[in-house]
Image (cartoon, rainbow, N blue to C red; front, top):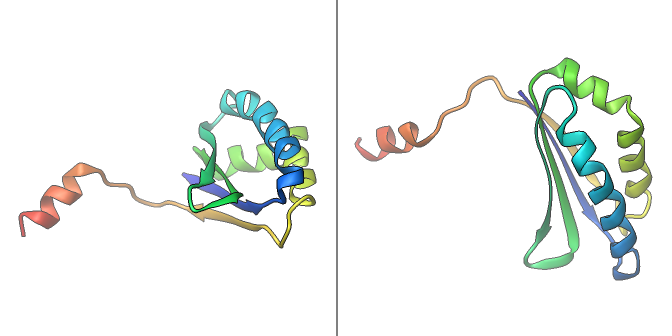
Length: 107
């Protein structure tokens, strides 16, 4: 799994436009082959900060998305940022759930 994260800080005057653009691509991205999750979040302590989170089944699925017109729109939105956006791609090699919490807590 590959996780794409974009932390974007936008001026209040740009927020509505950025929100509209990102909301317009969430639906199509969510149904794209290999997309496990696509969501937009806001920072409760900073109204100017938006966080776009996408999870992809494979590196190939992510690469296909990065070459898409929808991702080009994300790049355009990044240009509206107040400061340099933070973008990251994290490859996940293992995953655990509640069983790990139970294991750790039970000592």
